[in-house]
Length: 571
Image 1 (cartoon, rainbow, N blue to C red):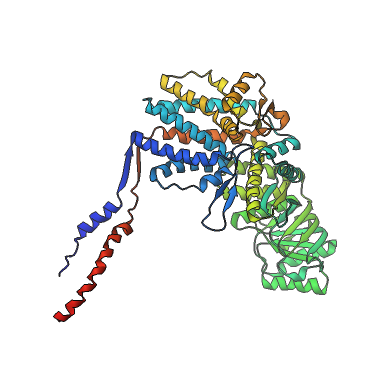
Image 2: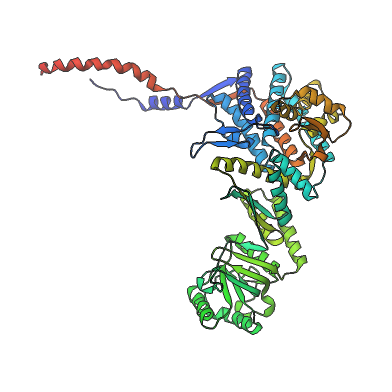
């Protein structure tokens, strides 16, 4: 039997069909998207408030994860239906954006996004203009944010930091106290990181002064054999942005060091083997007090870090751009001064740098400005590390527990609490428990819309700002409507409902507060994505692949062809 080759044009048509898309319009598309939004929001919303529950996530690698972190739950959800999954992914983007900007409030943004989406879709189904609805929502959100910022209170005390951290950690006072102690030690500009601990208890480790992750180049520099470290008091520091390859270039620096009777630390891009051998031999034979380390970082980050060190110690960087001075011409005023120097095989620590305090503060302000202007997360992280080295310190929160799952769950809460605390320091705090958002409804009454549809957009926001408190009450098995009416009837701005104790109280006195930045970011992100969703009329998605295994199953009956063996007699 002859087989005819498939024409090239037919093959192209078949390939194009495999790339075909599914189109859904109007109500059908919005209903499917809303179903996905509701499924994701239902899973995330159960974690909200002090009486919220945990969620168990299956992971593609490692063991299962138990968490109360909203963004972790959102990221772990993938729905089978294409349209429903598109709706869920839009809300995932809301939670991710809120987490990136504020570091907390992802559950709040998810609950708000669901409320905006439900109300918006209902309004569109009733025949209202989606574009006017969006304008009304945007106008109302701007008013709510302005009201929140007016009522925001600056965080000034350690007790207020503890309160913010405790609330964000779901009422865990031990976590709140741990974070407050960390900020007390390293200051508001210090770097605080969260890591897995090796014990049952949580621990706080603090490094004060300037520390960077480069150790001695050779172990022959060690002068404390027991600790395997180089330790000197009242040391000179030589900074070089270039590689030191010529022995003669550092001889003048060594002579000045010996003449002054002070130890010498050399920080350079690298040191050639010949120059390093000379330093080691002199260290061993003549007890020359010297140690050499490589400069931290790479590229521009290394150059900037060297300048930071020079300002902190009062030194000069040789080989920097615009610098004409050579190492051979070094003078005593070119050296930096360090009160205490500790160098291990992994890192170097400066304590009590001899730089001018005014110059250090000016450098710190410059770095703060760069942090505000940058859009790169990596660059922001490096700038924050540089700032911490200059004026703060580095604290490590080591989270303990009896199992990996317990440590992971607690670590998520501590990270959220730390991010919330930073946000509170940045923009202040408002009344917590959803009360601050709820009270903005009175400010929305003053808004005047251009038409009826825009007024409906404002009303959507008025109903949506009730959603966080309603969800907190629902998770606490309380009646949301009763609590909302009780709070709105009170003229006291600090009056609210303590879900953990089921009591009405002064929220500031009870320490139930939310960072203004977290609430603002959650509201902006949720309203932005949800209001855009109301303008959708068509959804284009991939057509689900058909499972060919079922179709092939019917061919099993061909096994009866074994009887064709009798055809052998025809040969």
